[in-house]
Image (cartoon, rainbow, N blue to C red):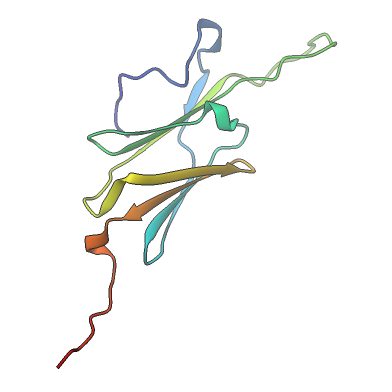
Length: 126
């Protein structure tokens, strides 16, 4: 994992994470892109940040306990938790064409291959 000097997902004093968890990942390859799937249950889309740095891709998110509405808290074991994972990006990745989406606790990051490394067919002319 790589270090960063950036704050973790707009952290406030009362949201200091009890632990930082490295989300489980799967990496798939298609002819056009690599797909990075990160398991981040409980992380709202608004708390997830992705940053391309000179070292690679850094993914961070914050999961805060839900406040009790119209109820008195009797037991609170759910703590503020943070997710953080870093990946090195090879030269074959187009850093300007990275896309991400989140559904059902899984963040999907599409890392498009640069045109020069994508397979292509060559037509025989003579």
